[in-house]
Length: 253
Image 1: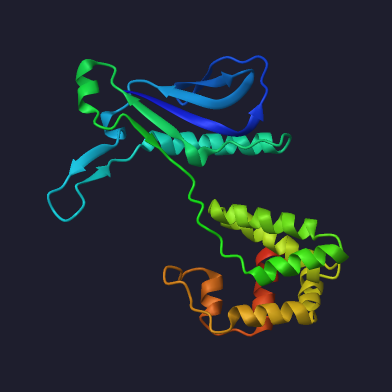
Image 2: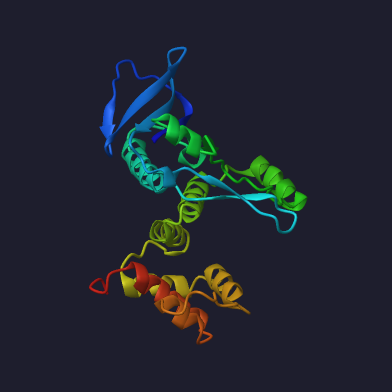
């Protein structure tokens, strides 16, 4: 079976000279449209038929059929493209939309073609509606009349949120900690000095105390040091100490 994956770029890209690239035993080519690189196409031949999604019919309930099977090749393709994009993002403002992969499954023989019940499969981003209180919207408009927007802070929050959505939890913590350090750290970076600065910040203490008040621990997290600490009903000082110790190496007192 032959599999073709198409992965779009978020914006128009100009790549003047390009050719096929070998990738994971397959081939990658750039799809051009009116002089712009529109997407990447990756083609893999002699793939197991099990990678193609199958339609399993049911006689029970209201659901007439369900789609079964898992394309294991797609997992590795997405991972490599995500990693490649991070290299490019260090230099270029580029984004590959790997959450919107389109896959086509083609039989390489008439027998294979007959056994493939679902010929194509598309992934799409889930963008649920965002509840935005009108009060917050109004406050932002009024605040922008008096001062510049917090662009630095918004950049770090956006990076932390994006990393969290990608389940890059360590990177999300790093961005979040950098934001906390820049807002409330008073220029301290060594462990003892930073802990003292955060503890004496009334605003940050209020944030910590509000966050841990009536907190319900995650059911599936019983092994991490953070989960163990939260289970003891810690004080704000305990959380601040743990927060700094998790980021600042022990040899920087």
